[in-house]
Length: 414
Image (cartoon, rainbow, N blue to C red; front, side, top):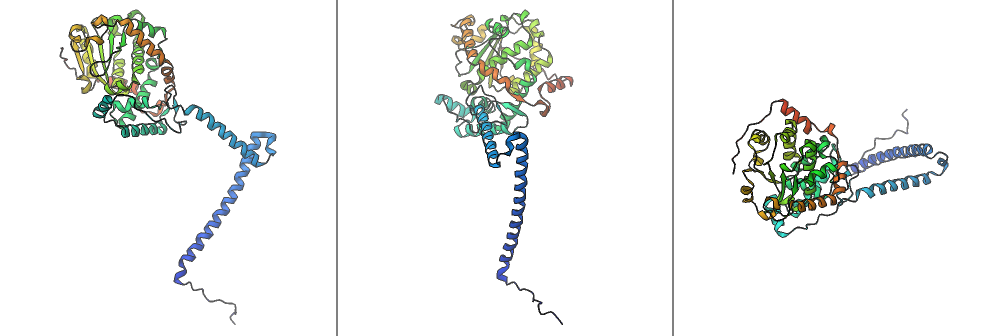
């Protein structure tokens, strides 16, 4: 006989389908809550064991007290990090990409309206594009697996943005290249110190000096005189350090970032000994750095009185440059020919101007002293070369080993 306790199948009305699904969801939530409860208990036990080993006899204190210790320790760590990273506007600070500032000081335009128009017409720069570019470059630095420590202030990043006319990918690539060549060539870029006796002697001798006055286009003019070198006391590495010292001192000047630079080289006393200091590998590395690694808008190379013995070397150097830079090289037979192409008043007295070279040197040395701390701090910038495929030094040697000499080109002399 069938049991009287048998129940008929339960019929679920159509309108209760959602109620059944909700019940299943609730059961899943309850199960998940049980798992969390177990995990929470185990996690508390793990923390207790950790602090027992960490605090020794103090581990018998209540867990709540130990958690307060954790909070205080975390606050102290954050305080130490904040002390170092909130100085974004200080160009002497080199930030790690794992301790980037929580916020960056807003850039303020301090130049004339005329330069604002120049920046807009030549570089496409406006307030929106500038702020967007700075934000994206800072994000690139923070997320880069290669960059370990780097400046993040606006003046430094604007070097790259303005050189590449606000092409963000190109600016970021140049920043990485810049850090690479600095780290791969410490003999050229480290210890850029005006108080170094060897560097100071070259500057005092009048080998290279930025002119205090700009040309008619607002560009910074840099004058170099080969005859003012004491070849018995210099090397190619030392000369490279002097040139890069000048470049770094001038690089944060915003008018120069916008209007560019003009290099004038008096080669009338260029000797075979000076030319022989530079190997083909070094020449290739310098050309690569100038074009791809140094954020600088070079608008002209003026070579004055170049001797015929240097023609072949010049052709080799020119073959390494881009077409854009080749077109900006001008040769002048005499100082008088060159002086006719530039405002004489800005030149040193020895080259037809009014201000003695010694006064210009003194002004530049004072400028170097003002930036000395910043220049030395830049040695702290770091990029992990092992993660950067084919950095500058290796690529230079590969090109030369492959016989890459380039096509020589005749230069017309003005």
